Length: 264
Image 1: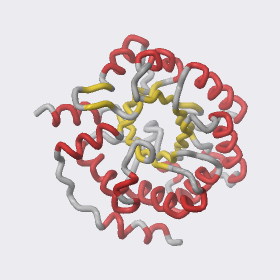
Image 2: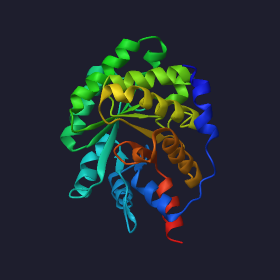
Image 3: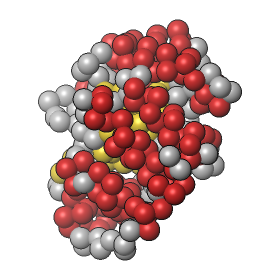
């Protein structure tokens, strides 16, 4: 498949989206509220977590560094909000063994979701089977009840065919979600990369016979920007795809924009 041609139609079909109350409510429920800063402390994360439950509803998940999982898990006990954390982050260069230890500790601390960085350097070096083994090992460690999101780092993969192949390989190896970016390299999410990932899900999904999703992250700050990704997913996958079980937006600043608009 010529992926550059395949994504032209859905992207060209995108129209300006009107930001209304219904869309804002939808966006809020799809949000992985994220704080992955070197300056994070228990005090700052506790305050940050308070933002996850709003007068208009709650976010899908809160994503924090592993050392804050217990704090977040305690804060969200008895609520539908999931706790997510990152492993092999951000460089994606740790050994399988060390990543599995990270996952084990995170599960003990109470995380519900693991966002793991795909070993994209090795993948680009041609180690495709090793990358698949990495993902399948991570999923085995997570088990069926913990969601595994695989961060492809599409800005580094760069080439449309490589992004498509990495998407398919990660999904076939067991990923529950494929995710665009760590947000730690210059190029984060793009509509082009997201379209390729969605089309990859459309292509391999039926043979996998399980629910798989996509998470858009890396530089998502504005309402209109987020709305374009929602519209793109709707165009390619249909409106039923736009639930927290199959579509997420990872961001730290977007919630503030949502709340500002909903409070007017």
